[in-house]
Image (cartoon, rainbow, N blue to C red; front, side, top):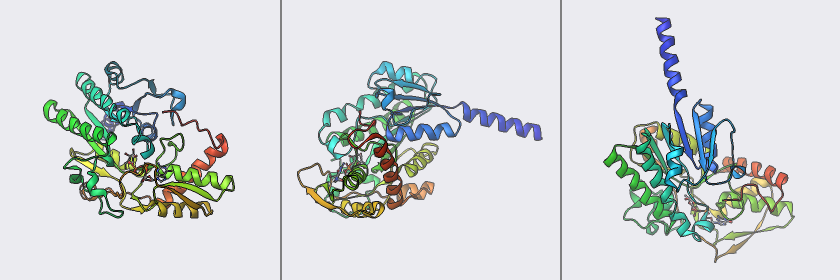
Length: 348
Ligand code: GDC
């Protein structure tokens, strides 16, 4: 009995080890952390990203690393060969400063999703994940500063963020129809402003948590007591730390859930409140210079996570002040090492 038990365990374990994952967007922020997590679970990981390898946030030489454009169908076919599961984290994106000024570029990411889905059918991939965004939600429901958390059904009637949000909403539906028409298992999650170490913090694509950490670090270094803030600082968001994102994503991916789910925190704060938290972390007070003509996005946004909580018992664990502290500490070391104007992470 013992031998049979050990054999069963061996084959079960080998089966898990033998799973091959493709992480599309492996050179990016969430993609890089996901690759590391999958590797630590013993999986075989294939990585692909449009960025040259030297600009990947995390690069693991033991993996097969493709630096090519997944908007091209031929590259999707190559990357998905022999793959069991795909996490598609790849898209041309950034914070409000980027997505408001690069709508066509953002919409072109539809080619990545389209061609990966087509390649899944050819290479018989078992399951496909698409990373969607809170930017799919109807703008009319985000006009007040403190709003109730957005529920999954609030994406319709459709009036998403122009460009980027439309691409995400369209691609969500494409996943659904590939499931209905071709039987491909898909999972889709709407992320709410994910932040943490090893992400973009300068160059124009950075989101508010990284941008404000950087501004305060530099203000303190340069002994200047003021920072620029986009908008009046009263706009609100909820932010999800990368570790919570990874745990929730894999929990949903490995579950039987086939609908579209929010993944975020419901700790809704204004940008001014986030700056106050950073002032405490840095032990440095700043004067806020409001720039009302800069990209602001929606007035208020937060995530309702009741569905995932109820079905999978998932909830975010890391409070904003703890996540910001980890991000700030990491960035401080980066800026001390690489200087204040240039980051090795700035290339798209
Ligand atoms: O860029 P973001 O984090 O994107 O901006 C949040 C708010 O912070 C905006 O109102 C912005 O004006 C304000 N803000 C103030 N100062 C600054 O220096 C700054 N830099 C930035 N970037 N913002 C500042 C994001 C999308 C993402 C993704 C997530 C999903 O929208 O940009 O691509 O899909 O949403 O939740 P945000 O939260 O509007």
